[in-house]
Image 1: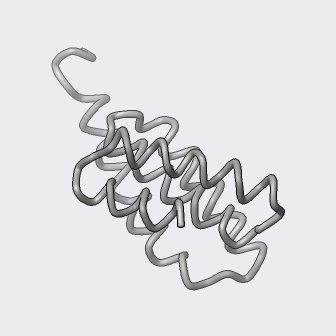
Image 2: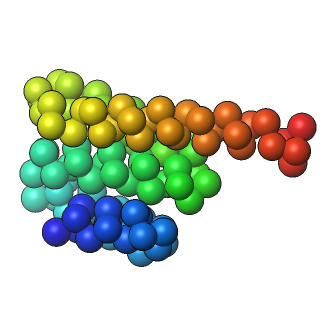
Image 3: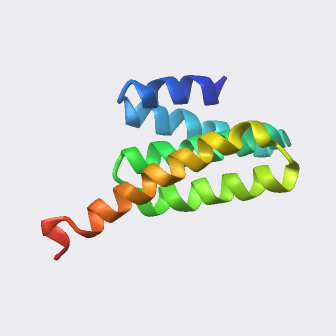
Length: 102
């Protein structure tokens, strides 16, 4: 439930709520040993972090989710995570090349 609601908030631009729900989802899925939900929440959290300007955390979380999905053979999320990771790399490049970073 946290992943679906967190993703909904994220896509609506309500990043604070999305991040809060997805962080809770990561914690609960690990606590309850639900590896598929842990992978899904981790990747979606990375995307939410990236959209919120936390691109370093976003890349780390997305890469972690992608690696875990590959290890588990959980292919359903891989195309999404790869697309989100590509978008996050673009955001990271924009942050690195912004006038405030020169």
